[in-house]
Image 1: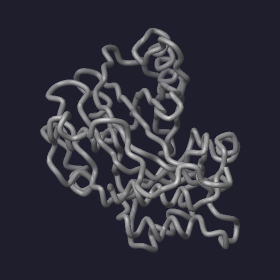
Image 2 (image 1 turned 90 degrees about the vertical axis):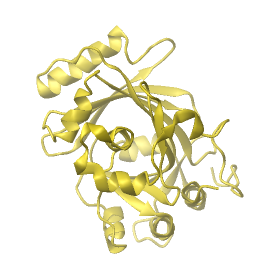
Image 3 (image 1 turned 120 degrees about the vertical axis):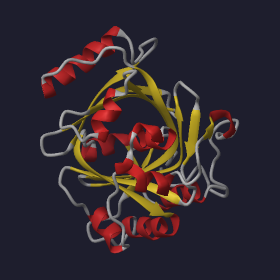
Image 4 (image 1 turned 60 degrees about the vertical axis):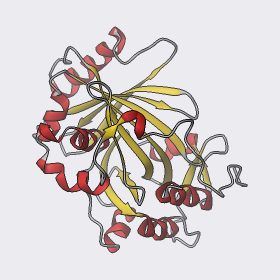
Length: 290
């Protein structure tokens, strides 16, 4: 059993639940500051226990719960130009940079088209539009949506020729307190959407933790700092591509890539197991209190 998946599942089940509607009311955070951390499983277990401790002065962080589930399967397709414009804009640290993706929430079937920008203070600003029926990220309506976002925020036009570039799959639990959200991901697999179809799996001993808030440092950030951890430049798109295509020139991400993807890329069919995502062993999927 993947130790990171087990740790995330146990932490989510140990916490009190919070429904999606309340999460959106308290901490939707479409404009927020993000900090990513690569957290060893042993540290994550202590960190999660402190966040969800009922004795926490302002109340414990609660775990997002939808239909009785507390951890969820995410499938994302990132889009880029044939020349990988958005990847290289991030690699070069350009001020006007963005990412485009289609996200599928496997457990509910919901699909979202999302555009993520960098705001003037370095914050992440997300724009999204729900996809239904035959809607697709590459159709004319989504291209118009992308163009409107980029013209309004940056004064630039949407690039032509967007195509699937990278696919990611992972499991996530989300912990929420007023104005704060902490996402905890495990079981990450990244693969090229085209080309040689290479893929890579994240280290099973790491949980990918991201803090999100309207301010800068949160209580969760400070807790992680107490464990000797500092924020990483890791993102699934840029570092996933860096792991699969090191020839692109990715020196700035060498450390997080080597830490997360400790094994070399392999042909995609040999990396992902057959069948649906596995449930962490010994965990009850129908916790009381929902």
